[in-house]
Length: 360
Image (cartoon, rainbow, N blue to C red; front, top):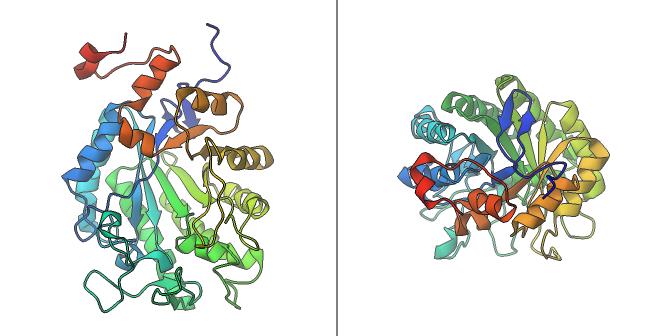
């Protein structure tokens, strides 16, 4: 069998860090934190993927402030005490040869919800487990939700500062990859999309104004990192809705992000509005990653219903993306890279403790 030009299991250099392969664990909320603090659930949940030989393990959306959580069970990094357990998790992941990453986020108007398996309704501010939500504008995601409070300039400045301080804590905890969550209808995406941002000031109306919030976050976050870190941004390439954020705007934004020092764009889509019309299917988001990569020259990751080693390998071979990010497939099989290597007839090291179970 002739080796492909680029393999799913080839290393990927990102500045001064190198991923040992192109298979990455996508951020997946666990709704299992206590007041924003990680528990043994997070250690075991994330650690199993590193044992399974993922190239990088990106921790779930981690809120930069209490009001930035999706639910009361979300992880946070708004105070120093939260660093201790996260440091243990980072070290375990590194000990297995994987790169630990963290996704820093603010949920905006999609905050204050119940855990999904308990209904995921949005709590009112006066209810237990609820709080006032915030957004660029005062329009709710669902008509019956309590409207978010439109952020003032001083509140915007505070959230930018929250991202900066959370990044400093993430560096102290030991993360190699810092990903800023600007997708899926959460706060930064709410500023980007003209469907959710109806402001009439310097943060609304024009493309330049709508991207300002994200760019100011990047300007504060980047100096917190050293040459040993990689800065990523997750975006929704399109809102899947008329008049919304789209691929052309994404390309303009990514050119700005690349110039500002972002190394990789994690390309997803949707989530801004509940009337979106998404056409799904195997690899349905790959064209977004491919177009952004081609038009900007930045490294990209692709996501979305990628379920086989062959699909993932084809995406790497055809320069559709530089990494494959997977969520549900890792939940189904935490040791997915070991199985995919066998499927592709590629030899990769096993953890010594698991050698006796090696695929033949």
